[in-house]
Length: 324
Image (cartoon, rainbow, N blue to C red; front, side, top):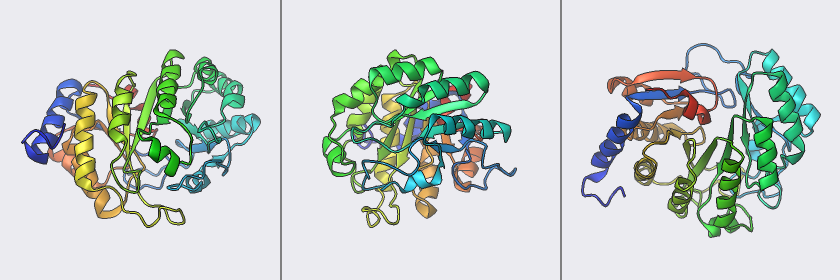
């Protein structure tokens, strides 16, 4: 693991970078889907390029300390199957490439997708949209129905600490529930792209390494790393993000744990000087993709003579987009 090799952080970053380049070539993809404001890709973007859609509107039973449902307010509401179909029709009519279907959670940690499976299957039949679904915890039958509906990928935040589940997410669940969810999605034939939220326990590293070990057992299509940042109006608005050094070490360890899997730095992470430094660490660690990259990340990628690609879809699609 990083920090225990005697190489120091720079040496560990170099090791991770060379491992990534040996397996994927000197490539990086920069993503800018339309569910967040960004000006970095040059040409104007449409709000319908790749938006997020919530099947619960602004509702979430968990009311997690770090979010409090506020992130749902940025999504297009589609609380019925009929409305989801209409929203997706509008996205395609507006020239969009696809959407992230998400929503708040039920008390058991699941996004209520079961009633939307037929609608998603109909959207798949009618359109060419990329359909990426954030599932939360999921049972075997719902996973099977989403697989039959033909979704392009399932996203699931994997939490490796039961204390974090109780105290931050207000969720009475265990690591076994995440193990089962990953297994059910894989059995359904769905490309699974787990997320690890680094520093979610009040800015501290707690269960992230357990989450990484769990994910590695289930042959993910890719891994997305996101980083806690305080959201105004939530119970954790006064907390600090995790220390940059610890996040950089975790990126290195993620590459070592998953040497042959694409790794992306996702859209949820702190802004400002922290973000610029984090993005540079990510490029130094050889991550395969960065969502909404800072100019520092782009400049470093150019300085390292990486082959740069740009995309307006969700970074979860790195498992398809990355080519040697």
